[in-house]
Length: 94
Image (cartoon, rainbow, N blue to C red):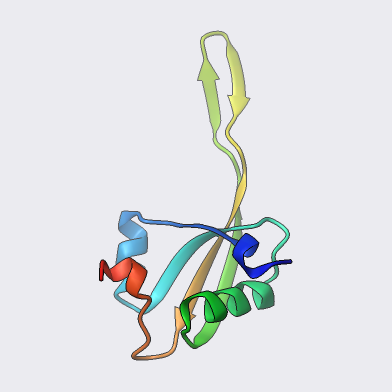
């Protein structure tokens, strides 16, 4: 898998901002990506040292439009912990 295809988008939420203060960054990743592929993609794309990677599958929520009920898309989330002193400048607004 190409490293640019592994990471789909960064997640910017209130929880993700609190984790960023601890040196952890949250990404939406390809569903078939492994922890090793995610760590390697972050290391190569942002030139940082990755210490750990946690992944989880986020299941879609039940939604209803008029008389039909359905589900939003499921996706995979990765929380990447960087070495102390490492920062991804894209998130910091530099």
